Length: 139
Ligand SMILES: [Zn+2]
Image 1 (cartoon, rainbow, N blue to C red):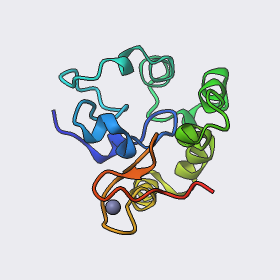
Image 2 (tube, rainbow, N blue to C red; image 1 turned 90 degrees about the vertical axis):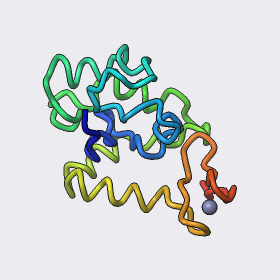
Image 3 (tube, rainbow, N blue to C red; image 1 turned 45 degrees about the horizontal axis):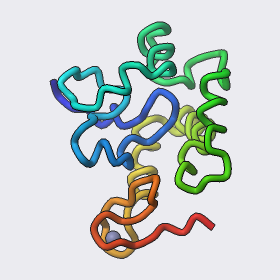
Image 4 (spheres, rainbow, N blue to C red; image 1 turned 180 degrees about the vertical axis):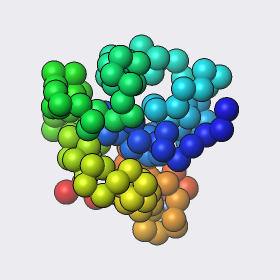
């Protein structure tokens, strides 16, 4: 199966391109349906099931129930914990995707998670460049 850039926009509004599972190659992005990937947890994700399998949407921003209980629970699951800052941003991300389109949003995210020192990838959880160790300032 071909891996598409669009697969890096998760149904819930997370940018999969900054996820350690993606850069390790164990996941092809939450929206991908490729069953050969190693990471299996996403197949049991309630948000993915609801959005992609049940509603046949690409993104939760196509749903009239947004922000629903599932999205709100994910957004607030680690409130205040910097490691999980990306979760607090999901509803804003979903709005932004609707506003500027998925491809433009993906480009924005690519820039956002690009190390200003070496151009490497700054992944979430640690918010640290995997190439030079630069730490992203989360205020
Ligand atoms: Zn760097």
